[in-house]
Length: 380
Image 1 (cartoon, helix red, strand yellow):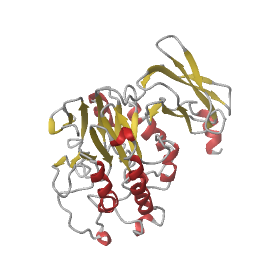
Image 2: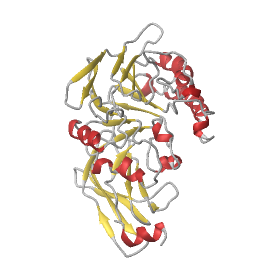
Image 3: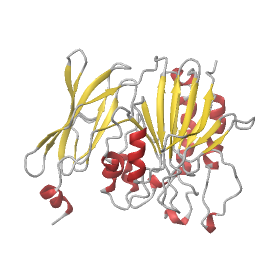
Image 4: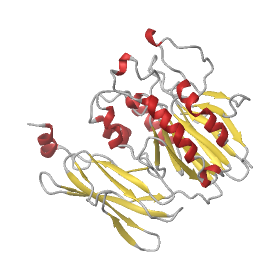
């Protein structure tokens, strides 16, 4: 019996919650897992009683797949809330239809006077960490999952359980996801399929968006060693991707809503600064604790834009590095599980709250204890 036959014979038609990703001012994308070849669409209800469906992909087809379905929503008013549900119908095997529960989704609002976001990182498929983060994190405008969702992709079935159904939770309920790609997220035989399960606003692993007074840049720092390192077996090309992002930064930071925002935040998995920047011996199992290659490519553009803070993960150490004359942006690094002692004690999350007076980022551990707080004044 083939893998496909097994799916048709025994697996559930729907294998995850409908996950809301890539929020924009005019929409978002919904991604959910399926166990066999199926088609799907979204139904929506507005507060005024209007209803509708979103049924077509970019090529005019009803979205269809045997592992994952994706529906992109466009044309909705900024800052509007509607209820949605995902409808799935089997194409292969016995006829079956599935309707998800209803969930409320709100588009981003650039004109809002306030913003609230949260940041997770380095969850590494650890269910205890994920459950604790999900329990601790309130509803927010955007939940930034700042890289290293996985350890590596050795089993293609793990995309659904890791990205769409982590610890069996609907982590996008009340907090649409902006997923940042980490270095572990590009490892393993099946890593090239990650883009099938992760939606981004512009279809690239970097983006710019605004939440009320806060402009956000999401950047892809790539791996923690040069592309030519033998462990990658010629399968990665992050050096040209960093160069592409350097060019893109000039365009993105010139957009009026990004250029003129009172607060300016960068999210990237590997930090752009670190407490010890000594050279690394890659031939002796060394790796980058910070991404010098990314910083060299992006620093000038970030400074010209007025970036106030870079929020990262990767090191698993809760670290705050104040701005300096050379680096006029704060570097805030959240914690992560300690694998040497198999402990989640160092794991943490970040909450960002902005209004006309300040943007305050607070880094808390899983018990709610605040370890770092950054208060940023609005730029003129």
